[in-house]
Length: 510
Ligand SMILES: CC(=O)N[C@H]1[C@@H](OP(=O)(O)OP(=O)(O)OC[C@H]2O[C@@H](n3ccc(=O)[nH]c3=O)[C@H](O)[C@@H]2O)O[C@H](CO)[C@@H](O)[C@@H]1O
Ligand SMILES: C=C(OP(=O)(O)O)C(=O)O
Image 1 (tube, rainbow, N blue to C red):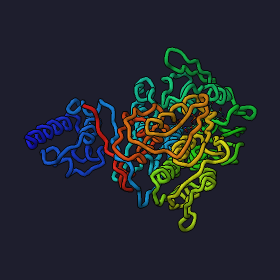
Image 2: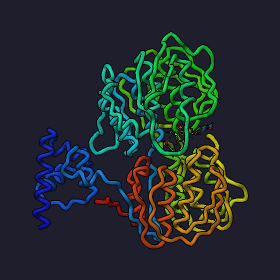
Image 3: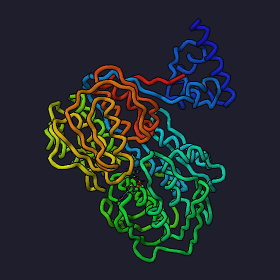
Image 4: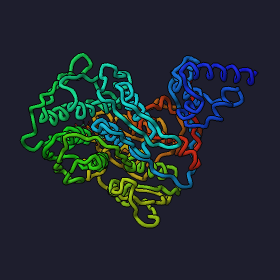
């Protein structure tokens, strides 16, 4: 029966592949597997997980196994296990999206090396492909090659993909150089309460961009005679706002000064990449950027985005709550030192292994650390984030699960996002005592006697991962439903945690 079923599915897959005019090797590349594995699948000689079927379904854009990919992906976690071993921090989501948008500035070929293979990147590559940009993952690698066409076909834009990400906003900066008038679908992404686009529009007005938002679109007009005649003063130190201003400044043949720029990690990565394009930027890593733009960028360039401080924090939090000794390699220390110092104050011990070294971008400083399990106590003061160089805004949620582990009462103050702190109360389903003081502040009473539970992922990346970490700590079987938000920002987090000894299975509802 099983063999019969497998060979029927194999035949359907072979037919769908031929219909799409793909070779076995091309399908194998899309699935990140070998041609011989595809041959076995088509001959019905390979057991297929629902996950594999879903990936084939996506690659072939077919009805064959549509059921598998159209339902949400869930995680089943057997918690209470200790982790051990070594894990590398991957490159960041936030640098990836900035670098992908920057590739639109270059008429030549841009290769992004070791890019995070995450859903957020998939959405952007879908949008890029739909408007005529050639994107290609190089074989057996996470290197993405990007080649724009002579003229982008904005009318053909994949709006469904565009509306699932906030990054679409970052097309404004690159596109204002290419069109006098255009429209983009409104931004999506995590639901973190209202996040306005006004700071983006304010920054880009200096380059003649005027945007009216209506009926689900940003309608943009560009007066190319307008030039930034005085410094652009950002009213808030936003990361992607700074990036949009940089995109505009990079192709403005003159000097642009940006005040109150974000010096955060993803902005630094973008600056290093723009420098490879031939743009001179003074003040990288500070809040005043002086950009000496160029008239045209037309060269083959490769860039290596750097490691993700938020993933580093995620792994540290995983080690703390599972009371594990793990070695976390490639921690971008400049962007994690406040977090680690705070944890030391709470009693956390860790060793730094060997010497500091430099990321493949030649700039970002990295260290390897080994965590030591042990009790923690709540910090004396409340924990709150600040724009860099402060405790990273996206790292704050991880202190919720750490505070739930620690002895005593911790207050977290997320002044930035309207909704994010609220989602942290979901930890209570796992036995934590998280009290919402107001929409921005939670008080957490530890330690927690964790218990397994079934929880729907909150619609926000970091809180969803925080729940996952609580589940790793909770003995018994927990279920986390609908984890697209996690895949938006982390590459194969389940598989990589399993390599450390976690027991996480993916499954879909049929
Ligand atoms: C793709 C990307 O890089 N995303 C990051 C980027 O989003 P992004 O740059 O899109 O962040 P926003 O511009 O939306 O800013 C986030 C929120 O912070 C507020 N705000 C921000 C800066 C400031 O000085 N004052 C202030 O009040 C904004 O009003 C907004 O409500 O920055 C956020 C804040 O670091 C991070 O959470 C996101 O992961
Ligand atoms: C809020 C985040 O990102 P984005 O701006 O992509 O929603 C995040 O990375 O936690």
